[in-house]
Image (cartoon, rainbow, N blue to C red; front, side, top):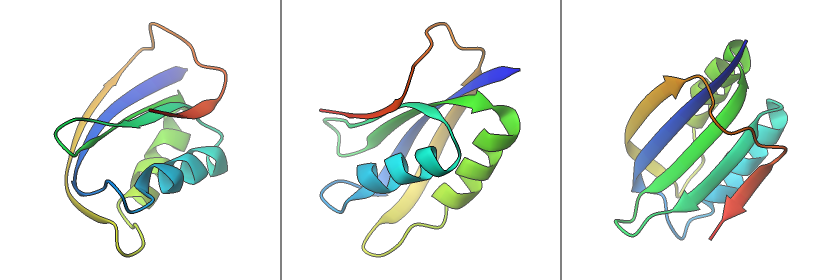
Length: 91
């Protein structure tokens, strides 16, 4: 069954290549959705795909490379209301 996880990631996640890291991870796990910077210096991520792929994505997301530093991840999982065709970096 298709699932969607919506995340807000806080920490040192803007200006350090984090959205590109997220896009590469999503592509590795065959997930679709988007990521974008938020005004409060956090990053929003929405991924859609099989639950097992999302779980693997989340595990890998928690192991970023320097200088990315994650302090907190707020997570909500639900059934998608809108379907995406690819993973995009939004501005």
